Amino acid sequence: MNSLDKSANSSISSALFGEASPTPSRDAEITRLTEINRTQEIKIQALIQEVAYLRRMRYGVKNEAMSAEQRSLFEDDVIQDLAAVESELELPTTPALPRSRAGRQTLPEHLERVDVRHEPDSCTCSACQSDLVKISEDISEQLDIEPARFFVIRHIRPQYACRQCETITAAPVAPAVIDGSLAAPGLLTWVATSKYLDHLPLYRLEQIAARQQVNLSRSTMSEWIGRMGFALQPLADRLSELLRQRQVLHADETPVKQLDPGAGKTKRAYLWSYRSNDLDEGPPIVVFDYQSSRSGQHARDFLHGWQGSLMVDDYGGYKKMFAADAQFAITELGCWAHARRKFFDLQVGGVHPQAAEALRRIAQLYAVEEACRDMDHAARVQHRQQNSVPMLMDMHEWLIRLRVATADGSGLARAIDYSLHRWPSLSRYAQTGNLPIDNNPVENAIRPIALGKKNWLFAGSERAGKRAAAIQSLFATAKLNGIEPSAWLKDTLEKLPVWTMRRIDELLPIKPAA
Image (cartoon, rainbow, N blue to C red; front, side, top):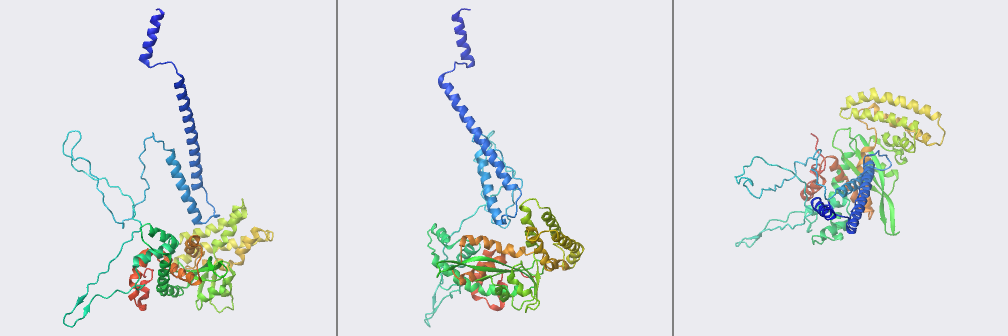
C-alpha cells in the first residue's frame, strides 16, 4: 500500500470512528471540565462532612447545660441547616427520587378540608381515543394557613317609627368589654394572645397590621389590654381562690425586669408561681403572682390561711412557713430534681463514680414513679412503700457513709449535705399516694414565660406586671386543661359584659369535673 492509500485509509477511519487529532482548544476544554469536576467533588465532600457533623449534633447525647427551650431552638437551627445542605447536595442533573411518606404526621381531623380537584386534560384515551372511566381517586393532603386577616363587622340596626305616638324603636347596642371601641372580641383576642401567649411586642403587631394597611397604634392596643386586664381580673382572682382549696401545691419564683423611670433603667421584680398537684383530683390550675421583690413575705401573703403540703426548692424565703412555731400549718416537700442536679453538676465535669452512683439511685426512684403514674392513691401508696421506701432507706445510709469519707467543702460534700439536710422533706412523698416527687410541674408552667420575657424585655410598671400575671394565669391554666386559649378568650370576652358573678366559675378555663 502506497502513502496515498495510507492517507486515504486514515481519513476514512477518522470519519467512521470519530477519531481526530487533538487540538489546543479541545485540550483547554478538557482541562477546564476536569477542574470543574474536581471543585464539585471537593464541595460535595465538604457538604457531606457538614451533614455528618450536623446529624451528630442533632442526635448526639444532650446534657443539662442547656434548658429544654434552648435545646429546642438549637435543634431547629440544626434541622434547617440539614435541609439546606441536603438540598444543595442534590445536583440538577440527578432525577428527583420519590420521597417516602413513612412516618408522616396525620393532619388533625377537626381542620376544615378544602377540596381542589385536578382533572386530566382530556377524558379520552391518548392511545385509542376511547372514553375514560373513573375507577378511583388518589387523595393527598397538605396543610395550609391563612395569615391574620382583618375585616370589618357592620352592625346594622334598622330604626322603626310609630306614626301615631311618634316614637322610634331599634335594637339596643350589645354591651361590650370596651364600650364604644372599634375592636371586636376577635381583634382583642388576637392582640392579647399575640402579646402574652406568643410573646410578640405591640410594635410588631403594629407592623403586621400595617402590611394590610390597617392602622393599629401601640397606644391604642395598650389601652385595650389595660381594659381587658381589668375585666379579666375577677376570673384570675377566682382561680387563686380555687387553687388555695387544694391540699398540695407547688411554688416557685423567677426574676423579671421592671422599668424604673426615675432611675432611667430597669429593676428586678419577681413572678411567683403556684400550681396544683397532678396527683390530686380536680382540674389543674396555675396562678402567677407578680411582686416587686423576692421576699418570702409575698408567699406568706398569698398562702395566708392555707393549710397543706407545699413543694418548693431550698430558697430560704419559704422557711418561715415551715417553722415549728409558725402561724402556718404547712408541711414542706423537697424536690428530688433539685437534689439530683447537685450530683449531675459533678458528673458533667468528668467521670465521678460517687455522683454516678447517686444519679443511678435517684433514677430508680423515678422509675418507681413512672410505674405507678396511672394508679389510684391506694395502689400508689402501696407501690411506693414496697419499692421507694426501701430504696430511700438504703440511699440515706449510703449517703451518710459517703459523707464521713468526703472532705468538707468539696463539691461532693455540698451535694450530699443538700440531700441529708432536707432528707425528711425529700422522703416524705414515699409514705403517701398523692404527694409529688419533685417541683417540675410548676417549673414547666413558668418556663414559657421565662423564655418569652426575652422578647418583651421588661414590665413597664408594677400594675402592668400584675395585669400580665393575671392574663398569663388564665392562659396557662387553659393550656393545662387542654383548652385552646385563643378560642376560650374570644368566647369569654363575648359573654363577660352580661355575665353574673354568681356564675363566674362557668367562665374559667378549666374542665368541669366529670
